[in-house]
Length: 149
Image 1 (cartoon, rainbow, N blue to C red):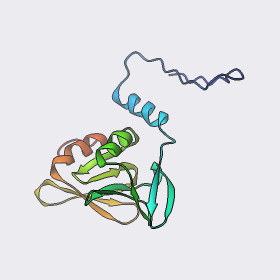
Image 2 (image 1 turned 60 degrees about the vertical axis):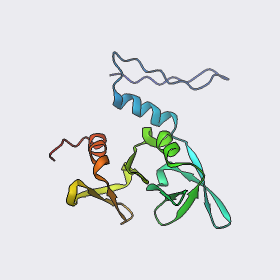
Image 3 (image 1 turned 45 degrees about the horizontal axis):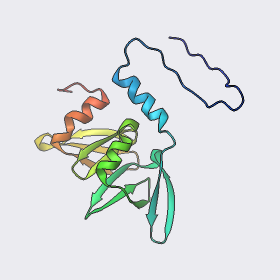
Image 4 (image 1 turned 90 degrees about the horizontal axis):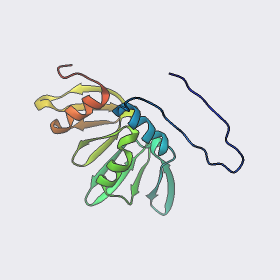
């Protein structure tokens, strides 16, 4: 594989061209992540409004018809539905782990099995979240973990 970087002419837009025989899911995910890398959303906390970068979000949680973004030590309300965030951020390594929670896979430090097929994710901010049984397979698949591991 070759990588070629060219400088555009003045007034030309930056363009990324990918030539490949068959684009696999990993390439498509990488390109979508690259395309939406500057995706920011507004977080609301008390009387202040904060611009949040997706890389700072550990997980999103829906609770009583409101959705919250959990960062390292702060929690912000966001004005999106959970399914909208899932669509927007799935290419950026966010994955559904329960009916009310989407986690940033980059923030998972380790996984531990629980009873009845659930997993516990230990996050890099020392929080723990539960991956419900029906979402364990898709999380393992996205992490590249074989069943039985």
